[in-house]
Image (cartoon, rainbow, N blue to C red; front, side, top):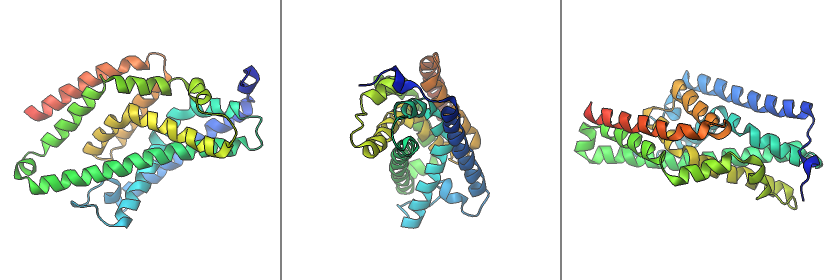
Length: 254
């Protein structure tokens, strides 16, 4: 049973957590910048030919995707991590438990990146096999934009968003503290799943326009942070959906 005392965490510990996440995100941004300037940039931008490619190509892409998630999405999880840090403050190794939650979160997003990669390879194969798609590649971007816009109006998105916006309730529904390391990792995985549920369509838009775009990464990371952590963030979803739908129509008619 949790009481108010479980939520007391020294200001120094909270500052250390924020500094850690900030350092991880900054390091990931630096890594992405260096990668994009290297001869291996195509693995980050998924500019490979159709087919699944070699295991090395797939592995490099997943690493790049994980870096991108740490840079873009991990800062949006600070409220949940801070709440979890407060709740496990009396444990023997609270820092380890928070770290396991971070790992679980990133692993979930990495798995989504793997699925997105396979889907993208399938799209490339379809373009190679269907002359009409090869002649009208903008239709793929248009379909992605329209799908992302439509998802902004779905009840599933707002169900996932509600979970992400209630860190204390989210943790209390999933944390018993018996197998603490396993539960901490599973907590991160579960939060990652709901975060994917909030943002997967926007991430596919970024996939379509190119993962190497820093502007898109910053924009989507900022949108996710506002939607999940700002009181008026929930109201951002539908206007953004309208913008995406209109953008899709403009691409079709362009």
